Image (cartoon, rainbow, N blue to C red; front, side):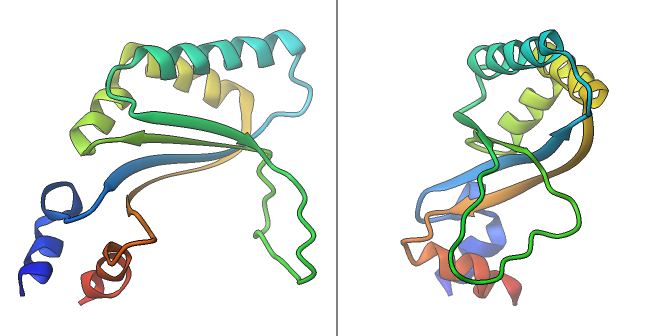
Length: 140
């Protein structure tokens, strides 16, 4: 029963194992952006991730083609880049979203991006029993 209560209390407060709040952004830049626009966006992204104190960890990636020998579908929109920004909790995520550096990054993002998906998730270490709580017990 204690495990169930910790699930209901919320991962940021009651989880037994590691947890993280992730801000996940998939995006595709607009066609025809100039090199200086890419540079400005990349510099603002780096500055924001380095300077905002609530950012625990941040990574950015470029889509790669992987032939695993089986059919794979990624939906109707192909996103060229991803960004994953991790926080200790929801208050830290909100601090980041309200930070002036993120506000400027967001302005550039919406100006330069053609397509995007943004979501926030709470995550646990998938090598532990916490994944069972997250995927199974929390559904009840």
